[in-house]
Length: 314
Image 1 (spheres, rainbow, N blue to C red):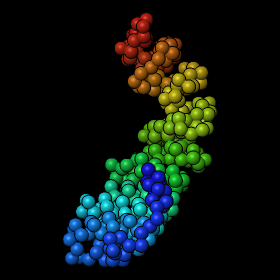
Image 2 (image 1 turned 120 degrees about the vertical axis):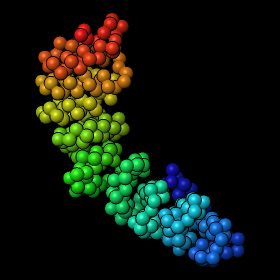
Image 3 (image 1 turned 90 degrees about the horizontal axis):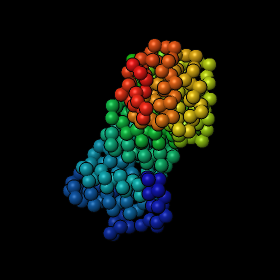
Image 4 (image 1 turned 60 degrees about the vertical axis):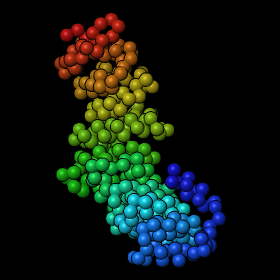
């Protein structure tokens, strides 16, 4: 959305003066301590009409956006910066690294992502924000997709042992749709991580890639045949999300030599919330599985009924 707005703004002819004042004169009103709030707001709005020519006002606007303005002034500053466009990038980088509040910081990230410049200069600040419990994942997904740096997130996740699992799960979420071989290699490697939280996040990322990326589905199917049972287990979990498309690939999993892989198939289908008659028939064939854990998981779900009765007899 920001990219579209910036493109549209760049098509209009900038003003050399607005209501009889130049950029510098309006900027003086913005920066004057004696300016009344209404006067400052009007000046902020006026500066936006100069578009790229208002670049000298970008530092003051960025400061108002991040730390120094009322609600209306911050909104107006953001709109003015949008109209200035790419020439505002250096000021926004400085403001972000100087400490933007969460909401305004996300605006800055969207702006930088849309412009495609300066991303590497705010990475450290972005990584600090990722530790916050309430992060806007959509904003960060776009940022890291445009940045395309798997190494940055992998290093961040590994640098603090106490936070490694949580950070790695976040990194996997952010790398799910990054079209990069290193991102895919990282996701696949994390399928065999010792921490279940990390494995689940890697499995979710694999499912996302299978749904959205051109070769993602084939890559996921290939992992179902991995020699590593742990990789197969979490690939099964991802495949169940797309089971209507990969039915033939899931059928052999019911006879996988590793019990934990078969158990994951059962748990994932039952946990999916809705399942078809094909799912039911597949699970019914597993009622006599050689592993007690698999049989118990199926017996424990006797309330899941097919037209012919319970899924498995107790």
